[in-house]
Image (cartoon, rainbow, N blue to C red; front, top):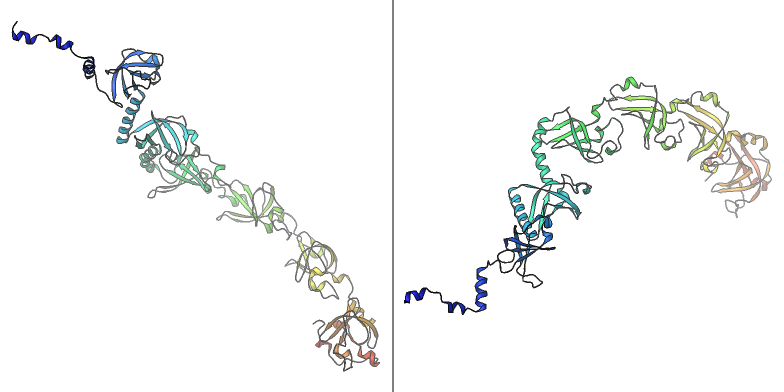
Length: 557
């Protein structure tokens, strides 16, 4: 054997001399070296009840839960190649198996797909699956968030209507590290509206009718989507009749045919009308409602100053409170009519330009001031109820719509009345005498004292100069004292007629309620005055003219 031959022969002795450790190291070096988190391909080796064993070319096989296969056992076969992610190089059970995952591969691939869609500005389909704080949770293969403000152009009132419905979204924010994905449906809608806006603008012209969808309702009107831009349908243009709130006529989501009333192309503003589909009922109102005509209608509104009567849809007339009844004691229309009442009235005035009709209800009844003199002749006695008191008198209603005034000076012949409440009270039933009638100004003067004779008419017959009387002091003034001769008749004892005693005061020590003897020294019934004297009694004078003028002294301080 030559040396060359010896060198090519296998060194059997040396190979057999390798240790088991060296053999293991040599085997390990022949296997693929994968790391946790890496995506690899493998082949299915075994399918068990709950797990699948996969060969990924490593020292140990890998294990995957059967639940991670969408179709379960029926969707896989031994030998199938699968793409998996290495979660752990050894399972927690210390069985030496590699823990693998298909779910995480799918999620990573989905993140890559979504990232590409976001970069390219594309859209993705998804289904809202539940409500969460501030919006909706959406399934797009991964869990994403749809804020409430991004659901529609205007945030919806009820987000339930969007659940479990497949929609198209745009990704507006992504954070793979945190696992956050934010979507928007609003952006897509706005882009679509913007794209169609130019088409819509070209079609819009005043007077044209167009279909739209009610998007939002406010107290003053409704916004209608015309297919790319919104128009305002004001409450006053919804109906010729009274509309208390737009919701009485329209509903959100309803399709309506509207008339374009005004179009501002520069500012892209559109005013819409609904009532313009029908004829304006005020157009020939003068032919249907002439002045003086009797009409019927329903009370649709009551205010402090009157009530509105609907004569036909879109046409209302006002019955002012002063035209409801001849009575002057009604403080509010609700005392006479109630909303919904059917009433009759007379047309008093028509203002077609301002769309106003004045109506009267009292005109359907006789005016109580007509022939008033025949019903209440001068000096006749009438009975009525005190309705109001003032500083100068009391107003008495003698029939509906007819009030008379009892002036304070006509309440008593003898009493000095400071306020009518001293004689009569509100709601008292009183008898009075008709003194004067002013038909033109609708006024009647009444008297209370005229129902009795004036006691001063008989004073001249009862009392004469020189007559002695016993009287009671009722009032003391700085110029004398007043004494009651009989109920309602008083006489004046002037200070000069009280005493000549220089030791007495000017008033002679008189007190209210004191009874004194006096002599009548002057009688003037026409002036409703009697002069009395205490001094004349003491001196025994039978009668004298007083040395003062009674005109110079008032009857009160």
